[in-house]
Image (cartoon, rainbow, N blue to C red; front, side, top):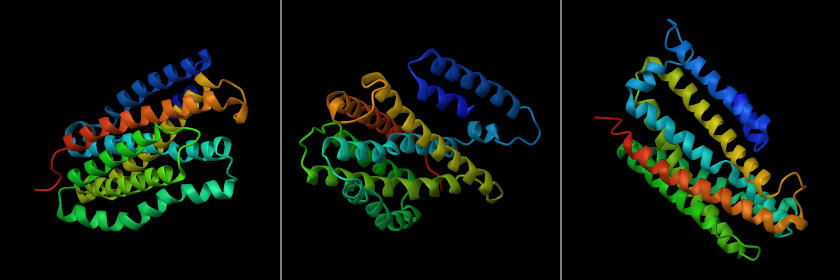
Amino acid sequence: MLFAVMYGFSNLPDLVGVAAILAGVALFVVFYAWETKVESPVLDIRLLTSNRAFALSNLAALINYGATFAVGFLLSLYLQVVRGLDPGAAGLVLITQPVVQALFATPTGRLSDRVEPRYVASAGMGLTAVGLALLTLLTATTPMVYIVASLVLLGFGFALFSSPNTNAVMTSVDRSLYGLASGMLATMRTTGMMFSLGVATVTFALFIGTTQIGPEVQEPFMTSLRVAFTIFAVLCTLGIFASLARGRVRE
């Protein structure tokens, strides 16, 4: 199911891509019907329908990873193709985000033990949306300080979101379901990553086509970059509401 959908995304707007996505949707219907009938399902659909905090926390994770994973990929191309940096220099700029995330992930996780996780995670989602919105304004001459500042904001926003959201997922279920909860969260993470790269691929296909990305297609590349970041910013903004709607995960 997931392979068909992502393969379809990578082949849009060709008819093969559309057919693959439709096949993925059909397989999802089959999967849903099967998992709701068997005695010991691989994925307990009933947990998603009966546990609002669990379902929306996983949805928030899907949205967050779907809106952020392709950022490094897109900025790496931007820094090398548009700004002329070598791969090493581009990597030094991009490392800003994971470093900031690593520094603040543990403190924000501890904060969510004292403060309701949905508030901390939603604040992180909001900061991430702001960081993505800033990246929609990129031009060929955007100051490097602006780019680094946007990455710092993204890193801090993701740190605020990730640990508290994981806390919310694990706290919303009984101990006996920790394995299922962890597996579900990992699935949302991986699916979000694939979706994020799928969006990037589709925007390249629409604005650049099959031409190899290089200085000669800088203008359509910048257009596809801004469109992708706009989609991610809107997606992350919607994710704020999903994060807040989960309700309280602890009494």
